[in-house]
Length: 313
Length: 313
Image (spheres, rainbow over the protein chains, first blue to last red):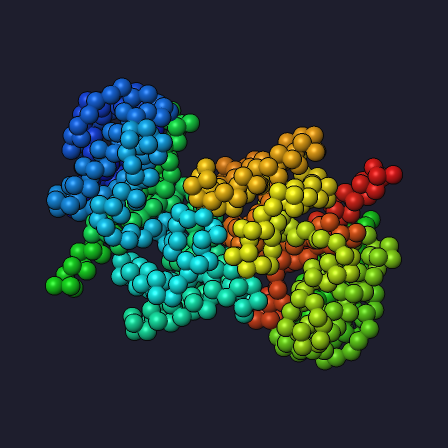
């Protein structure tokens, strides 16, 4: 059974409720190790009126503070950061095979003086690798070629070489059978009338398929048609040129189920795709679908990475 | 009962099948007048093996050619153009109260020497008005602030005055209770870190709400979150800053039901939101949902425009 470190996220939010509620289910697929100490776990469980399962193994991340549901706090921000660091270190030290993260609050990190914008930002710094962000669920995964940049910077970021490397890295990590690559412009440029970046996308696709020796990547697809049922029947992996092109349709269709995966890193990391949801913190209303899917995907990626290691030897 | 002119679209495609199949249903809501002559109708009906309903009233658009299913042809393109012109003229001459268009084939128009890109382009030229394109269905309508322009031109097209006029015109036409206006950048700019165009959007919203005397327009919404179920519960009208931002999520959710509406014109015009579907032409497989919704919406807009006339007197 795969061992996974679970970072508990901001304890003033819904993360710990999800971890406690889903434990019985996820322990069927993995051996979770929760990065929280027993005193804080006790405090949270009492507030939630949930009994702590006997086999809820904790790593014992250091720290102590009073949980204040829905509060943006430096103490809680700091603790969520330490929980995440412990999870990463467990993975780096091979004590676990992957990590699953529960949501942190970005402003709480800022208040605590943590200089990273979020989980992915910190992972990139630690591993000095260009992590690929992929979001979605079994039915539909979307990898983002560009992420958190202003829309006006997107068109000039479309470069044959860079996109080609991205596609190659993406393939190496997920090994999908078929991937739909989106165009950039409305109607995928309509033969150049509505933009010309599609020419670069075509070249990047051709180059990558040739390197891989088979036609894994198809496209460029017309962005607004690509998510209609008849296309989704054929593809469950997409590459979007920019954030909202991929995540608008994804979240419209699969908001509750979606997860966030960091690819192209030396460790496996998946995450829920929702925030701390302060509005429902400690109210017993948190939904576990996204977390459950994040754990499942982490297990799957651990298997894939093991296969890859064997092959590379 | 409202009279509506129906332009039959490219007769080598699925339009006429839809018109024949849906006649019994739509005549409950309107009095349709089909812009086609009886000989061509006969030819199409025979190929489809559909009996022509007795009360299938034709306007008698002139022209004669041999229907060739799935063929891009100058003759068929020319005829679809004439059918559309007849429908417009019926509306201009007050013989009908609105028009519903079935799909034309853009390349067939080009082959026929028609210089317009499509229906909306022609309408803009004839009426010299800035038509607003709105797509969707009862559950979700999306109006496009920018449409068929390259993505790289979108950010600089966001202007306070122009967007304000757009919002005002849109309100006048549809009179919605609440409208969600989308931001431009990922996370709606995240307070300026991911782009600054949202400041202009905020100002345009404030200006317009002030002019209208009530808070009709909300936003800017985070583009990828705006289409999740909890937001859609509250809004059924959206304004998107660009084509794929609005149409990606819309088509992912409601592809078969969606229609296309031209607002801000002196005549009411709605259309199906699909193409000629040559792959299934004359195979009895065409779906009528979009057409049915286009007719319903045309009737609704005719009522609204009548109310408006009364008010303006």
